[in-house]
Image 1 (cartoon, helix red, strand yellow):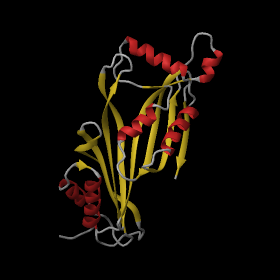
Image 2 (cartoon, rainbow, N blue to C red; image 1 turned 90 degrees about the horizontal axis):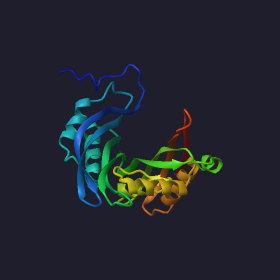
Image 3 (tube, rainbow, N blue to C red; image 1 turned 180 degrees about the horizontal axis):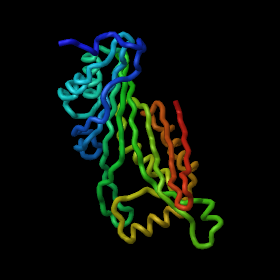
Image 4 (tube, rainbow, N blue to C red; image 1 turned 30 degrees about the horizontal axis):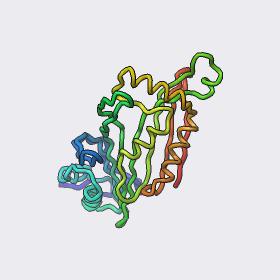
Length: 255
C-alpha cells in the first residue's frame, strides 16, 4: 500500500512537534506514603518531523503506548520516550502526562483525614541521550487581603488562590513536596474536610497571616530556592478576587 506520510511535502518546512494529544489511559504513579497510587492520565506524544516528509505515522504513537507498562517512574518514562523516537525515526521525542494526584490532608484540629486531588503533570523531552523532565502541580490556598484587613472595622475580603509550580529537577522529587510548599505559602491551606473547630482554626490562622498575591509567590519561590533537588522553577499565583471581577496575578521564574 502507498505510504503517503513518507512522500514529499508541498511546503518543505520542518515541524517542531507533531503527534497525538489527550489520550486517556490508567496510570500507576509513585506515592511517598503509600508507595504507589492508581490514577488516570491524559497523554500527549510528539516528535519532530523533517521538512522532506509530508506527515508522521500517528498509529505508531499508540503502538508505543500500548506496549508500555503504564507505571510512571524515571525508567519507564525514558523507555517510552526512546520507543517513540525509534518507532517514528525522529531526532527528538516529547511526552506529557496530566493526571490528578491524590494526597491525604488532615484537618488541623479534629484530625479528620480525607483525600484531596491536585492537578499535576510530568513532561519530558529526549534529545540525543539527554532527557529533560518537568514536574508540575496546581494547589489551591486561601488568602486574606492585608489592605482590606487594615482599613476595615469588621473584617476583610478573602478568597481562594491557585499556586502553580513547575520545575526541573534531579534525583527523586515527590509531588507531595511541591504541594506542601504551595500550601504553606498562602494565608492558609485548603482542606477537603473540616469540622467547626477546624473552620475556626483555619479562619483565625488566615486572618493572622494576611497575604497579597506577591507575598504568596515570594514565599513559594523562597522555599523552592532552598530545595537541593530543584534545578529551575516557575511559580505563579492567581488569586480569584472576591470583590473584583478580575484576578490578581504574580510569577517568579528561576532558570
